[in-house]
Length: 310
Image (cartoon, rainbow, N blue to C red; front, side, top):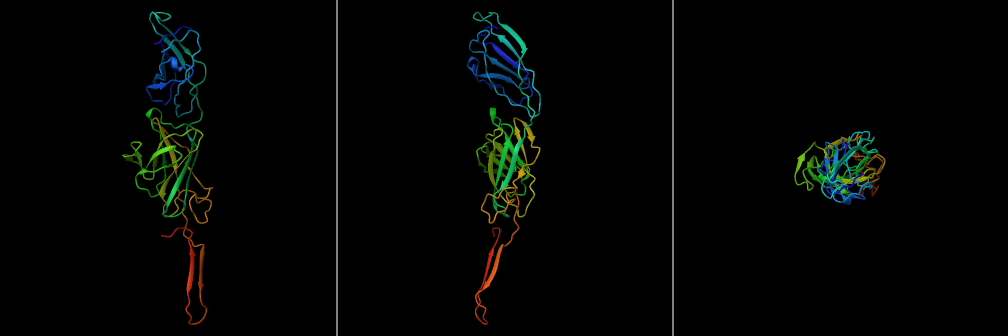
């Protein structure tokens, strides 16, 4: 109910248990131009301070927006308070400045009941052949946004791939652009992955470009299949803003679709990761050219294998 001159501050506090570890937050919205573009942010205190750069008339309705990051544990709404420190000076009203509040804000913020998880996580392979190069395709649908905000790069780690034969180091990743550089049995130290740190064998770490809540992120990479079927207990975890969680269930193997590669008489279930065909000859015939005594006899054998032969 007072006029706010340039230099006045609006403080919002009680915004605790968030994961936005930054010193400032950009403001936007209908009246963001009336404030300094970036508000000061203190994550540990849960406090945001916005500085006025225009003139706010008394009793005026002012609306601005800013983004925070929810924590990883279910929680109820926080009690949020607002206080105002009016600037002082001959052109201010009142001239000596003033402080208002704190007063509790109405509304409910920072509450949620669903812990972060991958609502859908499926992995499949392109061919079921021993020792052959196979394209592994992963489909993920998170219930939260994974975005590299404020210089923090989120990562996704897929574990349990040890049956595959892949050299340790950077691994090319193909797909929708949801993930960038990958590192097999290691973690990239930078986006270019020119240097990396070792991890458990059979672990793939991916730097996330962007994943959106409720939208599928599909990406692929190539491995060399094991020599025999191996039960792949594949799991997934994610790290973002120094907070991590592991999905409650492992990644589901694709047991309902046909393998996506060129496969002779493909069968349902062969898209399941590290499912390897046993060598068989579905076609095996033998014929002769002559049934007569002492005649030259040309024997012709026809074989068709169900897997590639070396």
